[in-house]
Image: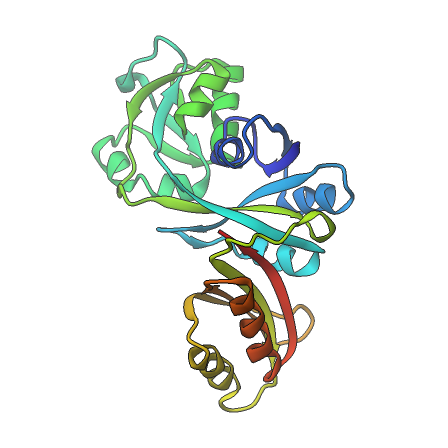
Length: 268
């Protein structure tokens, strides 16, 4: 299978894709919109995208892309995010003056930078991309923060392992396929749904009460603005289900109150 990811080879998305689809051919993309375009056009078989980090929160752009493309989530997986200080082979920690990485990764390593005042954090477009850049530039005073997979992929050296502030750092990844290729999983335990409501008092409460009445457990709710319609929102929910019939009941309950309901996937 060809699987698209956003980011460079060696990224956390690359690692997640390798675990969700062992043996897949990874297709790196510069931006998330390209990932969904390749999938929608049939140039890849699937995509692996991060949807939520336990510390940084949701990847909001991916909710919008799931809504606007004819795709379905077919599986999810949590990945432990472990940040490492990575540099040219033979470099010593005390030589480092600049550290490149994605802004979120840098923010998750504040204690490390507080203890290493000589190092300047510099935001970069991608964690694995920062390792690639370090290896290309060959500057012994510049390091990167990324995964151990990135260090192995580019032949770099891990100087300090596990430098993140919080060990409870996980990212949920979705495996996504075109709706035409997504087969229903009889063992699905979760359903993701997008819906919109009339702008009137109590409309959201009424919809959520319907979910409560059928006994489903709401595990996440997120709102996103509707493009071109100020102060109107699309809501995204994840619900635990015990069967395919439970998923249908969730959809029926929401349709009684919502102008738009779109199932984004049923998965384990």
